Structures are given as structure tokens and as C-alpha cells.
Image (cartoon, rainbow, N blue to C red; front, side, top):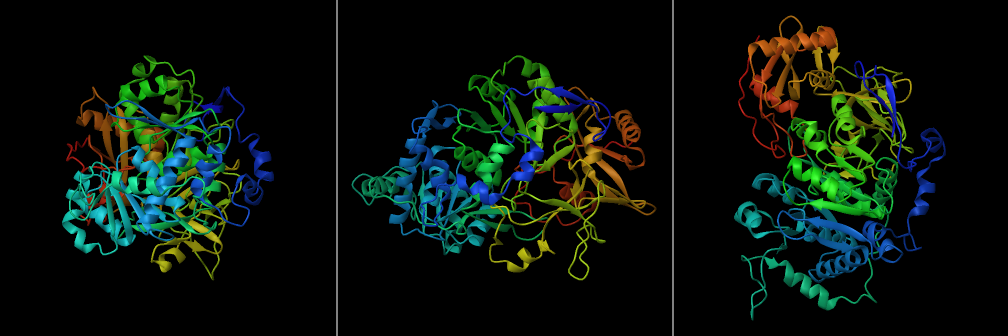
Length: 617
């Protein structure tokens, strides 16, 4: 697994060796980076020999036609019901039937299909069937309230929604008249009416079983064909929220499956025979790219769990299912950390060889905790909805530098660009300035990787602003050290400007998390008449620690010792920091509430922040 650092601040840690259990698929990183090309990697794709390419065929059908036909593709762990499984051959046949059912509903190329479902066979089959029909799949997170659901259905011009009756009645039915594009609602829990027209659910809906029954009756495996989609035909629509305004709809195309496959091999080290668990909900881009498409393309067995987070259950799944590769979020890791390493030690994970993180920067302490809990360091990855696939990773077999996101994926060119006054890349006469090692600026990527988004739906101006001088502008501030490791500083609109210094909140949060009382931290800049801004930290404490003025003073002193002048000047204790539903602490929401500013788009907020006690030293 490469080297792991254990002493000092992030970027200044002494590495120790952690031996790999299998040769990593990325191999020698430097050699791979020099020799890799997307064009050559495209030889993995099967296609049809006539220039057509379809994600679902590449992810599933190619395996169903070969030696993996009877291998379990997806194992569904339900909250209480027995475990169900689908082999690659079954997944091919049943997704063919879904595609046939959609075609009978007059759904075809360019039409949008959404799911609003928990992790269930119906969700996964809808994803693959939609792609096979040539339509565009758009996931919705099942915990969304009515407003974000309706907004995405409208913006995406969605024609088919697959959901359950309670979700439909509460979130869609009262506003159905405002969704003129929505032709069909398929309810997975509705039963067909005996002797009637098949509509066993609310008016304007159809039972999933009826639609699938019609598809099965019309399906002929000898004549069925996957839609002849081109590599640059739209396949996926992922909505991502900005700090304000309506969500952005990022459009991805069928050839993105090549990036999903390559990065699943290089960064996640996936290969046939692996038991793989990605805890991200399929309602998010991670849950689609690396919960469905990427791992299936590698021929692994996916484990998916419908139950809510429970530390003991998670450890039991890792143990009992023999998980070999575990992909999760820093928030989930911190939740496991809160329960103490002792609970992990009650279980054994002999099959586990690779633990990987996604969703937000990984604090160094979580990397080290992985060694205590699993005997393995946690490997960070960085990517965005817009990139569609992992762009930077701590690859297996490479030295891990806790606090760093790792190095660019072979085939991806990354750089840090000089900033303007707004923190974004400064463009002068149409050109940007590429910075040197350890200089802080906006992280940018050279376009050309297959999973790059091809548009913001119905917003070409916004799309154009995401590029400058031949670079995709990520909006993240970072530095790249002399060895090519990328270090996250913060979002351009999160960075704190204090007494002439630019302070990245992630560095401050990571330092405070090294204190034994601290479970989680969110850091913002608070206006100050002298310094411009001061650093304020909102701290969630571990069980057994009380929010007191003495502890607040201790944390400030701890921060000064670790960080010097960039340490927090104020501490607020908050046991319920606001998160996005994908697990990120919402710093901009902390700042808005602190300063009494408009809160902006709240569609992705996991829960309202509790008004925890603010304790000043």
C-alpha cells in the first residue's frame, strides 16, 4: 500500500512502510504516467465495430457474454429482508427487459429518466435499462424534499420517474401539473389491478410490475439490441448545487465509461474476483460512477446496503461479506472514529486490502486511524461532478502523504493557476499563469479525459465560464508540491483572508481534529476591523467531552501550537454541523448563519444545524 506518514504536520510527516498484499493494477506510477494514453486505453472498449458505444453494454453485457456470466454482479443487503443477488447474465437480461419496457412507453434517445428510490434492484435495473434504451439517466437522492425533487424534474425535462408511492404522493403528486414533460411515473411498490387497466396506484401512475410485464412479454433475447449510441451521445445528467441559484445540470456522455473503468482499476485497484463496497448513495455522482458503472466494468461483485449507517453493522458487512475494496466518505470515517477503534477490533477483515475515501478532503488523522482500525491507511481521491471520474488519487503502491489528495491519474494533466482578487484563476489577455511548486492557486485540468462533462444543461454561458486558455477551472484552491502531490486548500469562495494571509480552512480543520476531544470541525472567516477576517472554528466533540470555556481556550492554544498565526481566534461548539447529503460540512452555510446572510440553495442540506452552545474563552 505504499508509505504512510505518522509524525508532524501534513506534508512534513515521516513515512513508514505498509506492504501491499497484491501488486497494484496501476503498477509503477511514473512509468504508467509516461506511457498512458486514452486512445490506447480505448482498446478495452468492445463497441460494435461500427463506431457505436453504450455504457451499459460495456459495464454488463460484455461480462455476461463471457466467463463472468454466472458471477454475482450485485448483492443487495436489505434492512430486514433476505439478501438478493443478480449475476452478470441476470443483470443483462433484466436490464434488457427494462429497456424494452421504456421503449414501449415511447422513451428513446435524449429522453430523461429519473429514479427516486432507495438502494434496490429496481434502481440499478433502471440505470442500465435507461442507458440501453439510449435515454439519459438522472439520479435523485431519496431523502430530497419536494422542492429539490421538483426543481430537478423541471430543469432536466424528465419524461419518466421511477419511485415509490409515499415519495410520489408527498413530493411529486401535489405539483404534477407543473411538470409538463413528465409522461410516466412508475411505482415500484404498487400492485397491478386485477381485471382493470393495470393501474393499481394513484391516478397518473403505473405499477413497475405492469411496465416490466409488458417489457418481458415483448422481449426477445435473440432480437434485442442495445441502442446504437455514439461515444459523445448524452448518457448521464448529474445535478450539482452552487452556493446560490438553481442547481447545475452536468451532462456526461457514453464514452465516460472508459474513464470510469480506468480509474476504477488505477485508483480503486478493482479486478474480477473483488468484493467491493461503495457506501455512496446512487442518488449522487459517486454512487453512479463508482457504485454502479465503474465497478461493474471491472467485473467485480458489488455489495450494496439499504440500511442506514450503523457502525457495528458496517464492520459486520466488511467482515462477513469479505469486502476487499472499501470506498467511503470522510464523514463516514469520522462517524466510525467516534465509536472508538475498539469496535473495529471486535471484527476481523482479512480480505480487506484497500480503503479509499471520496467526497471531501480527507483529514490526516483519518488516514492514520485507518491503520489502527483496519491495518491499512485510507487513500484519498479528488474529483468533481463535472469531471465525472477520479482525477487525483493516492494510488495503491504509492507513498501516502496524509493530507494530500495524491497525484493526477495517468492521462490527466493538472496545474495550479495564478489567482485574481476573487480567488479564481486570473485571465489576462486570454491567458492564465501556471504557478510553480507549492504556490497556491486554482486547481485546473487540461480537457481531454473521456468523462469530462460536455455541457451545463440549457446554460452554455455558465459552461463557457468553466474554462480558460485551454484549462478546466475547478474552483478549488490547491498547491502541488515538488513531487507532484496535490494539496487541497479550500474552495475559492471558502478561503480566509486574514492580515494579508490566505488561510485554507481544510488545514485548520485537520489540525484541530488531531485534538483528542474533537470529532469534526468546520472553519470560516469572520469579518474583523483590523485583520479583515479572523478564523472561527465550529467544533463537534467526541462522546465524553463537554463544551466548556476551558476546553475552548485549550483548543485555541492547541491550534496556535500547531498552526501559529493562522489558528482560530474563536471556537463555537456545535454537535450538529450542517452537511450536504453527500457528507461535506457546509462552510458557506456556517458563514451565512454567523453573519445573518441569505442561505442560498439548501436543496442538498442533510439536516438543519442545531444551535449548539457557543462557548467563548
